[in-house]
Image 1 (spheres, rainbow, N blue to C red):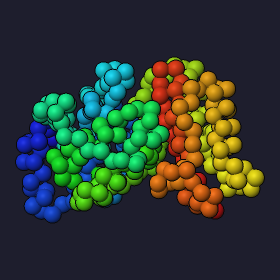
Image 2: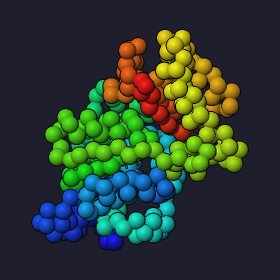
Image 3: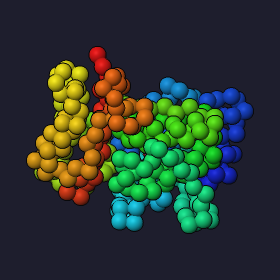
Image 4: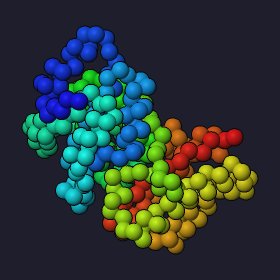
Length: 286
Ligand code: PAF
């Protein structure tokens, strides 16, 4: 595995692959790799011959009071995991490589519609930061395909919309969420949970699944999605979560669904101690 820091080095390294017509996959990450990332790498190899993993904690997507400084950084362990996963290139740019003119003067990408709601409401500017850095990574790497986790469902839709709107020649692939045996979605931010909080955290997914099943199996509940949401928020609060949102939306538009909708997504964001957890599940009419 090659480890490169600059776009110039990166382009030199991939030139031969491109000349040979090899498909190239990019998995953008912020490092601190875990089994959830490994699943993204395996997915990448289903779609491409070559794998480039970027590891960059993107300052533009963090709010002023968020965890940019203390976000877990584990470069040595990450390199080891990537070597074992058969990654071809680990791309680890510095901030000034990605934003040569600094953040204040950086060109930004906005994806209206998907970006201001849900996580965008609680993290203003977050999706502008995500779209802007992913656009830069796409321009630097020029991958044929890029893999993103379904766990960040809203992020996946933002990036899909950006790629479609800007006619980007890259296929965007979503990869199923990887969970601990008790159901908690794997996330770098799970390290912020205390032992007691870690024992409570799986309730988030339990509640998502309970609602997903209730939507289509119980006729009366299906008529009142708002009541299902309210009950779920109440249940999570009783376990000690500070719920930011728990909401049932159309899976394609993230808008409030009509009753006839058959593809729904249920999304949650909640704080538990120092950790802010997000998760989602799909509900499809049987
Ligand atoms: O999901 C993440 O880890 C980040 O938002 C991403 C896509 C790497 C952009 O910084």
